[in-house]
Length: 255
Image 1: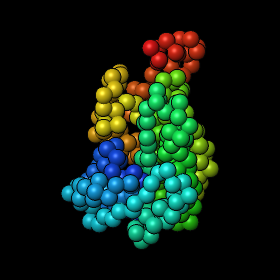
Image 2: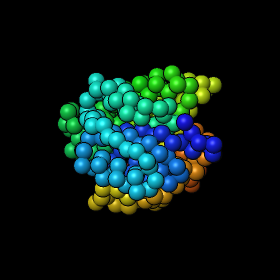
Image 3: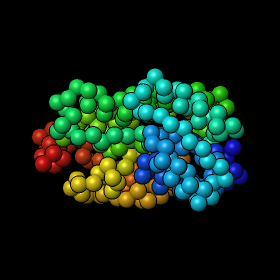
Image 4: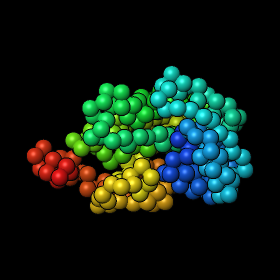
C-alpha cells in the first residue's frame, strides 16, 4: 500500500535489469519503496539490480526469471511476481524492450518477429494479467516505457518504432478503460537515451541519460501525468514533427 505521501512501497519491475528500469527503481527505493520484485532474463544482472535496490533503501527484494520471447509464459511471470510481493502491489513498471538492428532484421522474418514480440506482444500479454491483478485489489499504478519513436514511425527504425507504436496506442486505450477503478496507467516516452542498447549509434538532439529519464518519470508520477515525456521538451517537438508532410518528415528524420 502507498504510504501517507502517495509513494509506492511495493513495486514490481518487468525487465528489472535494464538500465532505465534500474535508474527508476533506485529513485523509487530512495522515495521509500520497500519491497521490490525484479523480473528479467539474466539472473546475475537481476541479482546486481536487487543489491542496488537494497543499497538505495529497499527492505526486501526478490527475482523472477523470464524470456520476453515466451509470450505464453507472460501471465505466469506476473502471477509469480505478485505472489512474491504478498501484499497489494502499488506500482508495476514495464520496461521490456529490444532495439534490434533494422538493416539486418527487416530481411529476416524470425528476427523481425522477435523485435515485435519483445516490444509489443509479450508486454501486452503481461499487461493483461497486471490489469486483472490490480483491478482485483482496487488500486495500483502501471508505468509502461514506450518511446518517442512510437509517435510517428521512422523508415529507418520501423520494426522497433512500429512495435512501440502498437504498445503506446494500446496503453492509451487501456488507460481510458481504467478510469474510475482506482488503477491508473502512465506511458513514458523517452527520446534517445545513452545505454548499452544505443552504444555505437550517432547521438541525436535531446539525447539524455538514464538518470534524467528516471527523474522525469518520478516528477510525472508525482503530478499524475498520463504521458511522461523525457526530456519534457519533446512533447512540443513532436507536436510539430508528427504533423509534418511525408516528404519533409522523411528528409528531417531519415537523413
